[in-house]
Image 1 (cartoon, rainbow, N blue to C red):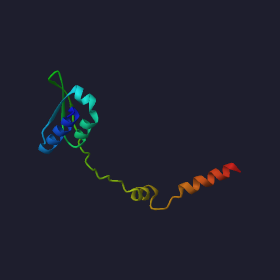
Image 2 (cartoon, rainbow, N blue to C red):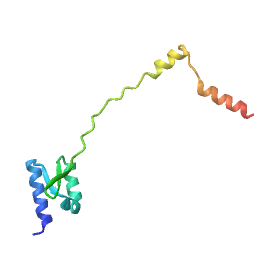
Image 3 (spheres, one colour):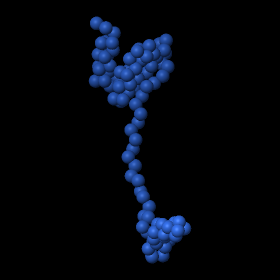
Image 4 (spheres, rainbow, N blue to C red):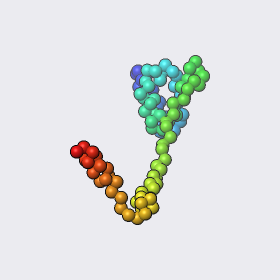
Length: 101
């Protein structure tokens, strides 16, 4: 059997048992996509070099959904204009048209 097959079996076992995965830098270099998938699935991968921990490949924490609170634009425009309707865009278009002729 090939070493890649054992690597797959070991990582599947680690996934089931939720054990932290350790791998050498050479193994990660040759099978990076597999270890990236492990990190995406929530596993933390410790990368070793010469038997010592060298780096950590960990999943990115999930973003919290924030509720966006928009200001009340209608109330603000009413406060600025004193309650009357302002046709600012209409006035600008009329001015541009008069300047053209």
